[in-house]
Image (cartoon, rainbow, N blue to C red; front, side):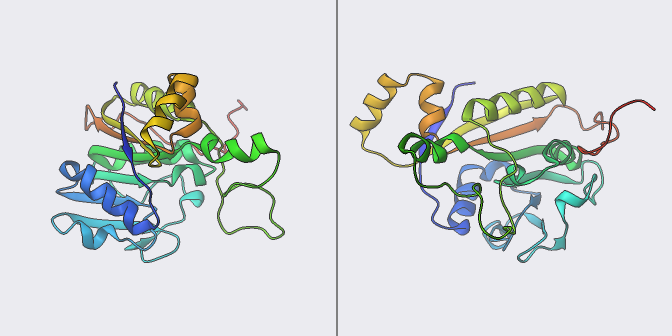
Length: 230
């Protein structure tokens, strides 16, 4: 699928939520589940939709610790659209929750995944500095990324899951920091194709559509479950 790029910064969670409301509005006009909503700014922004937000902190409609469950507390196909924005990379049980997003959605699943390589590239090349959500702080952080992947890996993950779970990819776009267009031109010459995206693209955004509302996912096993026989 061809990828479009939107040049944007998100100085706050609210600005990111407004980006979601603008760019994905046609998928968010009925019932919406916002997984990892934190302060739930979309509750007020999506005035035409029936909104439910879940999280372990902030102002959710329902408190849910995603890392402590194998099944979201909702029925199959309960929400027209399910949002999961910059959340999956924080979860040990990423694969389990991904399948649950699909199960409780009737039609659309909207997901964003960060390109971790972009943030890490400069400190690694320079041999100094740090990058957020990783590292080794003195005290255990309340939250951190559990997965470290490139843009290419994020895209391949989405494409593989779409095939596995009978989904179509309705829309796929990239957000990237605004840069001088001439600088961007020379960077694309030096780092063609996915090399450029792995270095400079910040986030992959995807809209998935369920091709069937029949639940074909089956029982969801914990990511930590021992799969050995006996």
